Image 1: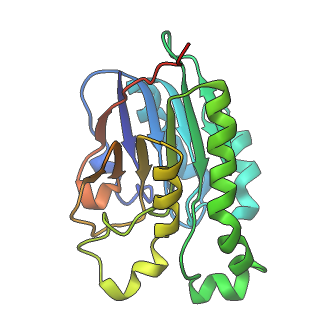
Image 2: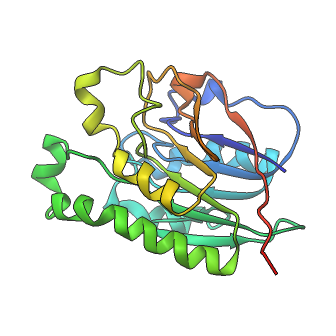
Image 3: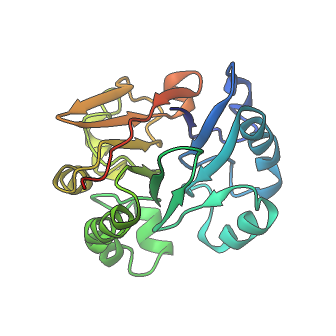
Length: 228
């Protein structure tokens, strides 16, 4: 099954990069879809996704401000928004579970420290929050996709300045994904990441940021069968 994935449209800035042929069962959007949380600017992004796929799942990025999340949910009910949540999708065949989160940073930015109370505590707990969600999702459907805005690994950050990697992602999440047997993860945020994807054993992690890739990413989703 093919899915279409992208992030960091920063609509309207990178709308011209939203081009893809064909139709897909699922579109995965990994945050920073608009600039400065302008809810109305998401409409052309959602219309593009609707024109190419049957189901749309998205997480929020740092440009979708926390205080605006409900506005996004209400304005775009055709999108399944996930914020430290999971959804089990019936795509006309075997099921797929998507665990969605903004993700975590190894080190909060100075802006986050100033404006988001308890952000350090939140990030310290995030790996285990993700682990719990994956385990709950796998009980309902064994094929789990991890979708986040921030990178769950540093291996896809090559191309970004090494000094800012702790502000772009959190490699502790990579360990959780490997330990829990997740085979596919999708993230954004890394505009200058030169590595489109990395294989870590049976786990593949994609950076689908539009400024880095230049177009949406097509991803084949393999289905894991339950053992009887």
